[in-house]
Image (cartoon, rainbow, N blue to C red; front, side, top):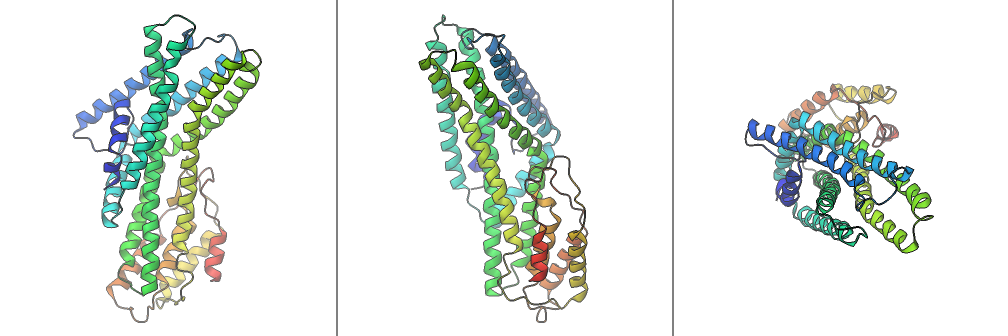
Length: 401
C-alpha cells in the first residue's frame, strides 16, 4: 500500500475543504478549477471569522476589550498561515506532484507498506472531527441568548476551519512518517549489505537515498514556510490564550463558566499543539537518521580505497567544507538535503568499506565512483533557521576514524 492509498480518506476530506495535497490532476482545467475553489474556500473562511466575532451568541464578550482583539488576531493569523500554504502550493504545484511520484517509486522499490499509516491517519482524523463537533457546535444551543440559525451556520463553518488546520497537520505528519520509514529501511539494508560483504545492493541503496533527500528538498519548498508560520502561530496561540484566561476571564467570569471556557480552549488548541510537536519531533528524528546513514558502517573494517584520485578528492572536499561559511536558503525549515556534511560523509563512508583490490574493474566500482564524482560538485545550501543543521564535528569524527 502506497502513501497516496493510505491517506485516501484524509486526502478526500482535505480536497473538499480546499487544501492542496499530493495528487495528480486529470487535466489543466481540473487543476485550475480546484485552485479557484481553494481560493474561494479561503475567502469564506475569512468572512466566517468576522461574522463569528460579531455574533453575540458565539462571542458574548465585550468587543472593546483586549481579549477580543487577541482572540480575533489569533484567528486571523491562523487564516494567514493556511492562505499562505494554499497560495504557496498553488505556485509550487510541480513540487507536490514530484514528491508524489518519487514516494510511489521509492515505496515500490523498497517494498514499504503504509498500512500502519492508514490506520493511524483514519483514527486521528475520526477523533479530531468528533471532538471538535461535539464540543463546539452545542455552544449555539446552550447559549443564554436566543437560538439563531445564522449563528449555527457560522459556528459550523468556523469549527470546520479549525478542523481543516488540524487535519492538515495530520497529513504533514503522515508524510514525514512515510519518509522516515523509507530512511530506516535504507539504513537497515545498508548495514545488512556491509555485514554480508555484498556490493551489488549498494548502488541501488545510494540512488534510493538520493531520491529520499530529493523528496525532503521538495517538501521543504512546499511546506517550509507553512511550518515556520505554524511555529509562530503556536507561540502566539499559547501566550494569547494564557493572557486572556488569566487577566480577562477568571477575574470577571463566574467560576463554572470560567472552567467551561478554559476546557473548550484546551480542546481547541490541544490537538493542534500536540500535532505540531509531533511534526517537530519527526523532523528531528529524520535529522538523526540522516546522520545514522552516514555513520552506519563505522563499526566495520575500514578498507582504504585503491582509487587514490577519488580518495584525495573526497578528503579535499571534506576539508574544504570544514571551514566553509554556511550559505542560507530563503526559509529552509526541513532542509536535510542541503547539508554539505551529511552528503559528503555518506558518500565517503558508504563506499569505503569494500575491498577495492578485488573489485577494481567491476561494474559496481565504476558506478560507485561515478556516483561519487557526480555528488562532489553539487551545490549545497544550509537551513536558514538552524533547526536541522548537522554538526560539523561529524567530519572530524569521520576523518579521525
